[in-house]
Amino acid sequence: MAEIELPKMEELEKIKIRSFERRVALTTSIFAVTLAIASLGGNNSTKEMLLAQQQSSDQWAFYQAKSIKEHQARTQRQGLELELAERGEKMPPEARNKTAALLGQVTEEEKRYQSEKQEIEKEAKALEHERDLHRAKNPYFEFAEVLLQISIVMASISILADTPVIFHFSLILASLGGFLTINGYLFLVRIPFLHVGP
Image (tube, rainbow, N blue to C red; front, side, top):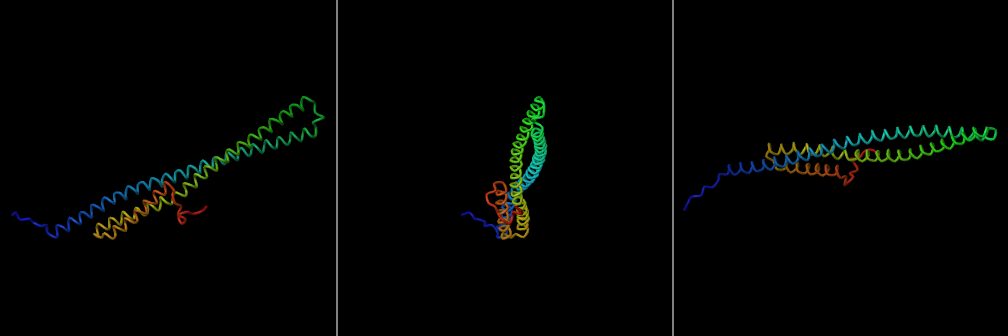
């Protein structure tokens, strides 16, 4: 019968340590990928928030310009109405007809500006809503990045200290970071303490 050589305890311990180190290294790479995804989401959220804010400001400036034109048309309309009321019967028929035609044209312009303002206001408010949505998503990405960075450090420490408890703590942190990343993209749950302002 052939003699079977059993591995020494030190060799078994080294295999066990290497297995733990591999598992931690693989898991840490998953943490790093999740961190990259969270970072991308945070950067995109910030860019989209700033872009929506800029576009909203542009729309409100456009709204203001239309308001000024509407006000000018209203003032001109009121002046023409006053002129027709005061001098209408005394004006030559040709001048009265031209004034009445101009009054109709100015009245239509005033209505058009008012209508255009309403559309611009809707667009501006939609952009503000988009800005607010991206602003609300951004803290999830920020906290996710922090948790994932800490989990990577904790996982590295667990290898150096050969302590599975620290590794398990890093798994908890990474899970929370992963959840916050997913929530940043999908906005499934609104966590009150992560929201500042309205």
